[in-house]
Length: 478
Image (cartoon, rainbow, N blue to C red):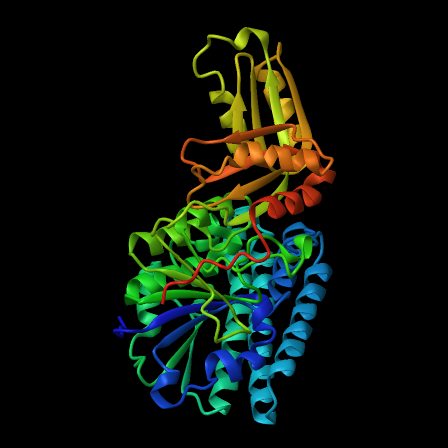
């Protein structure tokens, strides 16, 4: 495996990738000269919007190639969707590349991958027209193949762009395209980087890695961060860096104002886990686990401010208690009330089994003598099915699912801040009401339950209470 005493592994997200030509003159090269350019491995996501077209839209659920193929009664829908992907890929690289030769190579790359995928799906459809073969047995492999197209395209295009600018960049395709082998993830990464000298070459690596574990089976679209973190661990990186289009800040600047937020600067993996629980991932929790266990610090930067050190995430405790971030999300409160529950042990085991079966993510839970309430991240459609199952198990219980919201103040150390009482007072002063609130004894977060319409103004109120616009960011470690 490739190693370098001071190398870093760095990931660029999809939104930033769509401006990768801007990053050429800042992040990739900037003021660096000669050997200073190298010692860095870049893991790239697909250009913005491409994975949505290949799979399904992450927010709206609008069907892409995968969803249309899975649900189609005929070929027309998914074929048209695949043509749309090809058009979008070409538009993306035409925005980035300038030289005619590079544009021709990129167009040829897209044609090869799209034609190959089209033929593969046609053959799969024919195969599954026979009774001995079931399309459902191949759906995960098809999803992985389609997803890998986006990262392979962006990595190839980025390599062309950097080569044209005098950087010795190497395209590292981990997608398994036309590969007859079946390596595990570590083998795939090791083989991909074999023969690369980090002192003189810059690997541009696909965020998707085809392997026997099947990254999408467990991580779905969070796979690129798993590839990124495992690569950092395998190569013994001195630091893992995620480049986003914004800083990791004390709140969403669109809610509380750009002038009010402050960059975190320094926090730890505990806070990163709480953010992930609130749907605001700095990094996928499984990826964070790999970095934490291998004692590799993570840095989150603004890709377009290359001279700013961003926010360092490690295992160090806070020097002083403080609220570091205020965030929130829409939730559903699943409440089960039964008078005869009191004194019965393990009463909620069946509730957890039903929620697990319906793949409902639990954010928090509260209970008393005869009521158990789970705060979950799900849709009302799914929760109706959960209610139906629970009514069968507990016919005497009253089961309800109610749309609500949850706001949270988070910090490495909240001891002595009276965050619960101050938060409740701030909410009341804003003219809103907290329907519930909880704070654990570890003092890393406080949760406030609200009506959905109150979430945004409450986040603003809590941020105003705990984070001053003039308060400096926590200085990042060098």
